[in-house]
Image (cartoon, rainbow, N blue to C red; front, side, top):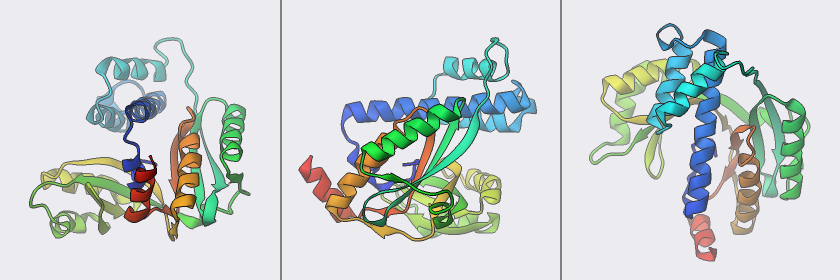
Length: 253
C-alpha cells in the first residue's frame, strides 16, 4: 500500500511477492518516462529524471529497462508517452477510505477499471472530495533499521532539515516532513550515512480507523484488487490493522 503499509507483511506467498515486484518496476518505469518526457533524456540536465533513475536503480530495476524507458519518454523510439495523473476516492469496510492515485494514458480505461475493482470487491466509489479531505500531502523517507540505530539517532540527523516526526515501524523508521522539505531530508540522511528508501511525497491519513479481522480481510481484498491495476500508482488509506489482527489473518492463511 504505497510502500508504507504494515499489512504488507501478510503478502508472504511467492506469487504475491513476484506480482508486487513487477508492479513496483512498472511504477518506477512510468516515473522515468514522465521525467524524460518533461525534461529530456540527459540526467545531468534533468534533475527529475536523475532522481527517478536513482530510485529505480535503488529498487533493482534492470539497467536495460531504465534505458528503454528514458528513450520512450524522450520520444527517441517514435512512441508517444502522455500520462495524466488522476485521483479516485472510494470507501471500504468499517469506515475505511481509499485515495487512489492513477497515472494513465487512457482516462476512460482507468476510471472503468478502478470502478469495477472497487465495486466487485465490496467497496463503493465516493463523491469527489468526500475522501480527499481525510489526507494530507507529506514527504516520507523510510530509514532502514540497523543494529544500534535508534529513533532519536534518526531524529537528530533530520531535525534541522525540516522533519516533523520520526515514526518507528516494524522494519524501518519513517521520517515525515512537508513534501517540499523532502530534498533536504534526503541530503541530511545521506550526510549522516543512513540508508533510506521510498523517499516520496505521499498522502497520509490525518485520522486512522481500526479494523477487526473481518473488516481487515475485506479491506485487504479490496485494496489488493485496486493496487493490482496497471494504471494505479499508489493506494492510500486510513485503515489501521493491528499486529493482533494481522496475526489472526496469518493464522487463517
